[in-house]
Length: 76
Image (cartoon, rainbow, N blue to C red):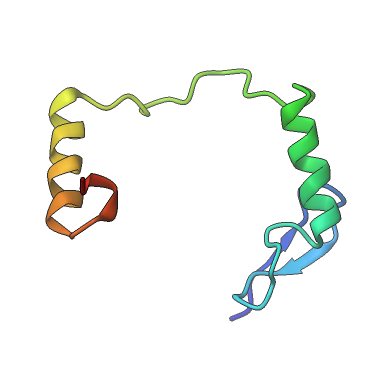
């Protein structure tokens, strides 16, 4: 089944697939317009994200998991 989404900038239909280079945007132009809106504070998140707070124990567990996966971020 093919998934189609609307470009967040111009609402053009975009097929969600690896070949769609700028997904969810239809083009680099729309991607850059969106980035500019965030950079100029035209777009903002007005409410806190619910349930996004992680405890220290959760963060430690995630760090341990990433370290076990030979992640380059944790190497000196």
